[in-house]
Every structure is written in structure tokens, then in C-alpha cells.
Image 1 (cartoon, rainbow, N blue to C red):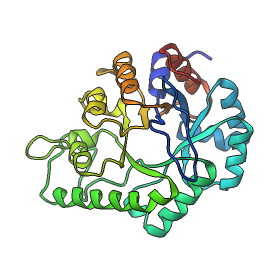
Image 2: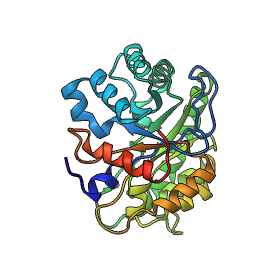
Image 3: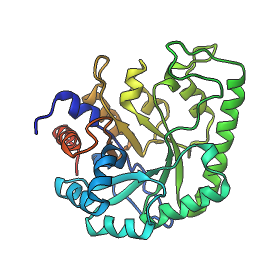
Length: 287
């Protein structure tokens, strides 16, 4: 099946193991260069059509060694067996935002992560300020957003405290609005959060979304160093495009350990994720 540059680059996603984590989840070997993992959202329709066991076996045969999946919805022990049987490791999970994670739910998700071997939970959403339309062409800062930032910082600090005894960490994932929304001093929502959040709260930068929002993702690894054991990489359909060579040099210096392939299209087969993996291999990343 033929694939286009768009198929390759929109599929790209990155996830880093950074510093190894102790605790119930053991260690992830990051190595001197980032490795390639897959976000299962990228093939969700395909997973549902063929089953997780078959799909994961095929991913392992393609050369993937890391998986980022949802947090729950599967039997954790069964999922761990499928991972182990195919030589795969769970590098992180996507676990929802603050409203989906009261203390009891967060503890249950921690136990799930420990069983499957994932060292971190990432929130892919749920942080939008009340009343903000993220699809609006112009985003305007409201006074209430300052309180919302404080609420989020408090939540993630508290979540980090809950997860620490499990040997786990929590982090936040971006889209475009977190960079498009700026306060009255021109500071982005993303910067307002990470400049105030505890250093142990991780930054999972989606470099495609960040680039589309008009910021340079490389700068964020310098601004918030050693907080990104994971990142997602996808390319945009039109300029601006991601500076992949510069990005890889920057993330290697920062210690990002895994690049997680993520597809927004072509999710009913493995063609796009295969092309993405080949592209990253061509840039020097490891299986």
C-alpha cells in the first residue's frame, strides 16, 4: 500500500523514558538514543477489528517495542501477558483529566499502571478553562483563567503525591489551544502551568500541535528540562512543519527516551504507523 509524506508525518509520535523510575513498575531502558513506541489510539479501529493479541503481535513484528495505551478498559493482567508475550513494554498510559481522577479513581489507575508496567500517567485533556471555546479563531484570556491555573497546579501536585508511593509520575499533554491562549502579558497557558507546577509533573509535548500553534517545540525542552520522558510527534498537513532533525538533537540532549507514533488518520490499518516508524528509524531512532 502506498503512503504519502502526510501519512508518514501525521503518524509520528514520541514518548520518552527519560530518567528510569523505581517502584512497582521497574525500569525502562532509554539508551543513548530515543526509541520508537506506538500510541494505541493510532490504530484503535484496527485493534477492535482484529483483537489486541493479534495487533500487538503484528506491531512487534514491525519492530515496535513500546506501547502507550489507555488507562483501563482492559484486564490489566491479560494486557500485561500480551505485552510480555510479544516483547513489548508499556511506556505510559493516557488517563484523563482532573474531573475524571478523584483520589479513589487515581489510585485504581495507579494499580492498573503498575500491573501493566507503565511508569507514568498522562492527561491528554480535561484542562480547558470553563467557558473557553478552543475552536474559536481568537482566544481571549479571562480573569477566571488565573484561578483555573491555580486549580490545575494544585490538582497535579496532589496527584503527584498520590502516585509517588507507587513509583509513578503524572504529566500533561497538549493540543494547540494551550499555546494559542495567552494571558495579558503574552504568556501562554502552557507556560503559566509548567512554570508553576512541581518539577515532578511531566510534560508530554505533542510537537505537531505545538508547531501548528506557532511555537518552536525545541524551546520547551530547554525551558522545562528533564521533564519529558514522553513526547508525541505528528506533522502538520501544511506549514509550519516540524524541524525533525533539530528536534531529535534537542530531545536527545534533554534525555527523551521514547518517540511514540500517533496517527490522526489511517487508523483502520497499520500502513501509516509503519511509515512513521520507518521515518523515525531513518532519523536514527531505535526500536
